[in-house]
Length: 102
Image (cartoon, rainbow, N blue to C red):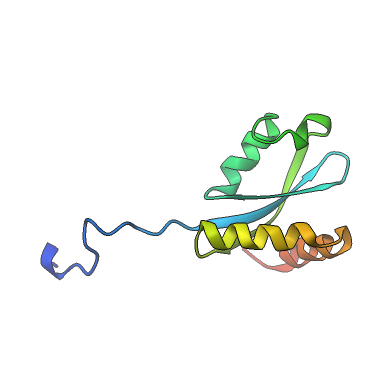
């Protein structure tokens, strides 16, 4: 049994939360890129037509790619990079994620 004094994490030290960059496929086949600390919850929000005007014209149908990042800043940087990619390159990301076993 360990005492509290042996615990290396201080109670006042903030616990780092993982952030993700993600791709969602819309019904019309397009891909939406975003960031979230909970991509599954965010996808559910998109499915309800909330959180992004992007899905007003074509509903969200599948969360097709997630990538864990160190923090929100890194997730936003990665989002900018992904958004600059051609659709074919984004589809390669989706295909690579489909080959990785959970």
